[in-house]
Image 1 (cartoon, rainbow, N blue to C red):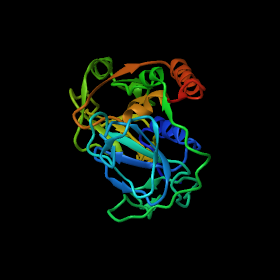
Image 2: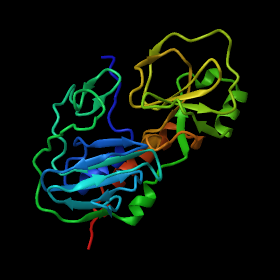
Image 3: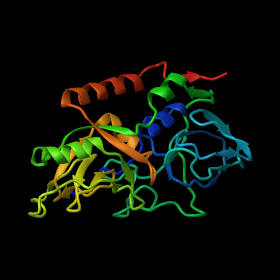
Length: 290
C-alpha cells in the first residue's frame, strides 16, 4: 500500500522491555533517539528501560537498564543523552494506549500517521496507559542474554537482487571496507561514508520494490541501508541486504559509528534468525531479581 514498515528501530530492545513489564512483546512503548526526556507519572506504574544507556534516574536515583522497577505516583523519570548506542525504549506495564492504524500502534513520522497524533512527543503531552497486568515482581535480563544480544558492528548480509551486476572489484571494496555512519542518517535510511564503489554510468535502474535492510548503492558509489521508515520502491541497485537477525543492530548505530559487512548465504541467514528467535523465547532469558 506504499506505507513503510515503521515500528521500533531496535525491535529486540522493545520486545525485551515489554517482557520485563509483563506486556505482549509488541505493546506500544516510547522510543528515544540520542536524547531522552522527563516523564512524570500520575499513578503507580511498572516500567523498564532497554536498548541504549541514557543515564536514566528516578527522582535523582539511578535506574538500572534492562530491569523492571516500580514507579510511585508523582515520581519523575529523567533520561539524558546516550552513553551507548542510539536508542532507548521506555516500556510501561499495560502499554501506551493509542489507537492502532493499519494494525500498528507505531508513529509513522514522515506521513504523520499513527501513534500519538502522528508526531513525535512534545513537552506537556499526556499519554494514557493500558491496564497493567498483575502486581510488581522485579525482573531483569540474564547476563548471558545481554551478552548474546549485544548490537553488532559487523553486519551480516545476503546478496542483493542486483549483486551480480557489480564487478568483483566493487564486491571486494564493499565487503572489505569499513564504513562510517553519516550525520544525515535517520529512520528512513543510514547513509554510509567510505571508499566509493565503481558503478556503471548508465544511470538508475527501473524502480522496483525494496525490502527492509536493503543496501542501495548511489550513483556516487556510496551505500545507503534502507531503514524502518524507508521508501517502498527505489531505483538504485542493491548490492546486499542486512539479514533479519541483524536488523535490530541498525537501530543502535549512531552518527560516526563504524561498521563492516560480512557476506552470508540464505541458509545461514535463516538459521541465525531461527536461533535468535529460540533464544528470545527462552524462559531463562528473563529472570526474577532479588
